[in-house]
Length: 175
Image (cartoon, rainbow, N blue to C red):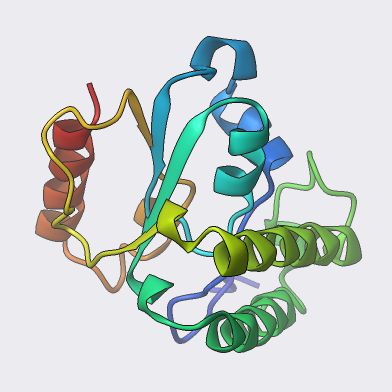
C-alpha cells in the first residue's frame, strides 16, 4: 500500500500541551523561569498558559488570534475532529511513542484546546495576532522562540522561501 499518507485539506488549528512541548523540545522549566519565550505559531496550544504557571513569561503569536474565543472554540473542535478522522486507515504510519492510540491523542488535543481557550478568554494580552513570516516584535524581544509543528507539516503548501523567511524571523526576535 504505497502512497498512503496523513492528509488534511486545510491548515489545522490544533494544539499541544505543555507536557508535549516539554518532551518535544527537552524544555526545562527551571532553565526558562523568568525568561521571555515566544510560541509561534501557537495555535490552541496550552504552552503559554502553563508556562506562565512555571514563571515563564510566555507569549503566543498566531494568525487566528484576531478572533473571539467562541470562534476559536469552534475552529478547535472542527480541526481536532478533522485531524483525528484523517488518521483513519493510516494509524500505522504514526509513531506511537508518546500516545498509546488515537483516543489518547485526541484527549491531549482537547485538553490543550480547553486550557488555551480559558487562558485566551481571560488573558488575551498574552496572545498576539500575526501573519507569518513577519512578526510584530523587536529584535531580541525573546530569549527563546518555539514552533511546534507548523513548519514541518505544510511543505506541500508553503514555499521553501516562506519557511526560510519564517525561520529567520523567529531567529531575529529571539536572542
